Image (cartoon, rainbow, N blue to C red; front, side, top):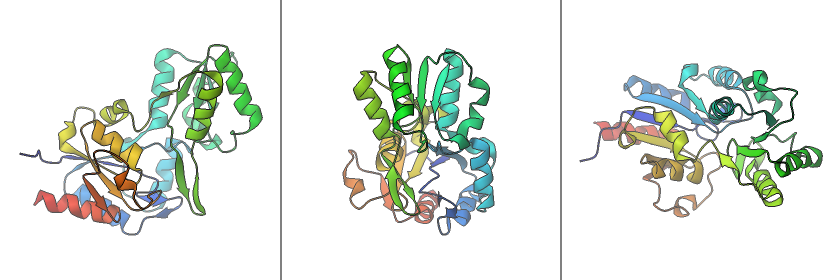
Length: 256
């Protein structure tokens, strides 16, 4: 007998919102989950902005949430840097630096930490990172997203640049965000994975990652979703829904 769902993990960019626009009906759908007494955790690989900025933007879009409900790959990376006492070179967006400000030193970096940082993905910065790796620095990938959705269409994620650094330096990156099992387990805390469901628009990072950790995965056809995505992973998503609104409706109907 299937266990009752008690926790819902929800991706942000592409699932609840796209840039500064909420997905139609997403605000109300999130409220429906909350009113059903389900535990909610907003799990995100977003590295374009600090947790504070992300929280403020979601509130401005009308979402009812608490900052502690956001579990980000930035937080996971920060925890790793502190636990290993690393001195990082940060290839992350200036808007996310706030989360690492107290960890930056004048010492020679012994780790290259990469997130989504379009302004940093230039030859000089990447070459600086490459030389550090050759000299023994570790490579930390906050995530390896292939692409993400912007208002003007799909755009390259950090994955392409991380793979380039790996190729040239012969150093394998350690990934801390989705789709790693450790990330999902940390987000769940003590919740049984069989009692959780993940909703996201990224079939690999959100759905395949969650299902590998024993969490039911629902793929939504918004954000970065492309026709046929549900067929490129094994096992396939537990369910495919047109949007977050439909995914919530499915979860709540199964609770009746």
